[in-house]
Structures are given as C-alpha cells and as structure tokens.
Amino acid sequence: MAEPIPLPKPALKGKVSLEEAISRRRSRRNFRDRDLSREQIGQLLWAAQGITGRTAGAGLRTAPSAGALYPLEVYAVTKAGVFRYLPDRHSIESLADKDLRQALADAALGQESVSQAPLDLVLCAVYGRVTGKYGERGVRYVRMEAGHAAQNMHLQAAALGLGSVPIGAMDDKAVQKVLSLPRDQEPLYIIPVGYPD
Image (cartoon, rainbow, N blue to C red; front, top):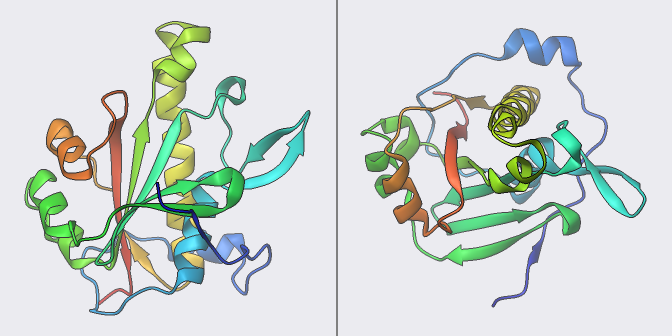
C-alpha cells in the first residue's frame, strides 16, 4: 500500500463569516475547467470529517457523530484519481490513479456536474459501526451525520468562493463498483465542487 499523502494544514480562520457562507451557498451544477489546489481539497475534506480536538485519545471531528463512532468514509475523485481521506492524519491515500469522473457521472444517472467538476466528494456510510451499538436506529444516526458533514462541505465551498451541489440520485452498486468500495460502504452523497461557471 502506498504511503499516505499529507494535506496542507487546514485553516481555522477564513475571510468569509459563517453568515456570509450561509447566504452564498447555492446549488451550482456548472463548473469552469479549473483544477482545485491541494489546500482547497484538504480544507473541504477537513470540513467534512477533520479532527478538531482530542478527548481520551480519540479525535473529535467537525461533524457530530452518535456515540463518536464516526461511520462515514470520504473519498475525493479528481482527474488524478480516487483518494480516501484519513482524518487522524489529515492525509489522503491513493486508491486509483486514473480519472473516473465520467464513470462516476454515469453511475450518478448521467448527471454532467459529476463529470464536469474538478472534484467530486463522495460520502459513504459504514452502518455497522453504529448499528452494533444502537440497532436499526443507528441507520438514522448515520444519515443525520452525513447531512451534517455534507452541509459543512457546502458551507466550506461557499467560503472558498467555490460552487457545489448535493447529488443523491445514483445507482449505489454502480458507484461502489466504479470506486472499488468495500462491500460494507454504501454511498450516500456525491458532491461535485469547483469554480462556478
């Protein structure tokens, strides 16, 4: 397995207030042909599941999680390949080194924003991490957490002057196949991000 790729340290203070980010957040489906920087990608991944503190040796994250069980896995899909976010190290691991955005768009029922965006963030659920403690109610908790993480990413995108759109319409099995996801990881969101056109 390849060594994790460190990401630049996330900024903890920006130039845009939370209120401004909320007012700027809109679903954007058209993007310019312009890559995002490693800093931008790292900031967006950190907003989803980054470590914000520690308690009893465990990392506390940007999104609340039932029982601090953290059932989400976050993937970044770019023209350079597919990467999994490693929150504890604020780094990414390379899973594929080819551009799979068009295949991902096909799995998302042909939505062009997925193939057009320079970055697709994919949120996946590992339900077993939570249902083992909370039973079937844990499914609800995982979905709530995915909503928190997704909103963080959308607001972070707005604060960075980027556009984003939440995509929920997809063939789950096809997304799993395109990204070579483990069987226990179910895709919940695809969030294309880029400079709005």
